[in-house]
Image: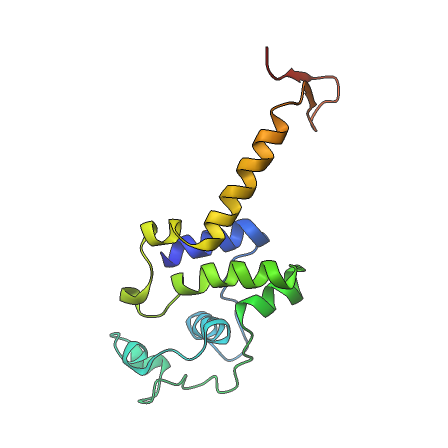
Amino acid sequence: MWFFAGIVFELATGDLMFAPSSVQGYSDDEAHLAQMMELLGKMPRKIATGGSRWKSFFDRYGDLKRIRRLKLCPLDRLLVEKYNFLASDAREFSNFLCPLLDFAPEKRPTAQQCLQHPWIELKTRNNACEIKRDASVEKLETGINKRVRIKVGP
């Protein structure tokens, strides 16, 4: 579900959600972990200290060893400030994505649960209304070639 959230974010924004970049003095892995924690909050200690290489990145409290000052920016704020989402759209989208990005995999919703989320249901209802309205269109112009016409209906 984590990767699904990343794909949905990329489709909506055109950017990778967590694009590790070389930051002077830090490894790509450290920068990547910092990006995740800036967006999602502090990683639970149990998860931070649970991997085989945890001592390379975290102290015994679950804090990053070398990157001390994180610039916290919740997902909905990022969507508004960087991607110009409307605040209401950002909040709805964030409410859908954030549970998929829970650091604890067992807490993430299943695909079936995602389909029941209000954000998905809202988008599906809106799209169904648009499809009904568009069905009455006789001809559509394509953006590729203005001379090409597509007939819809009998």
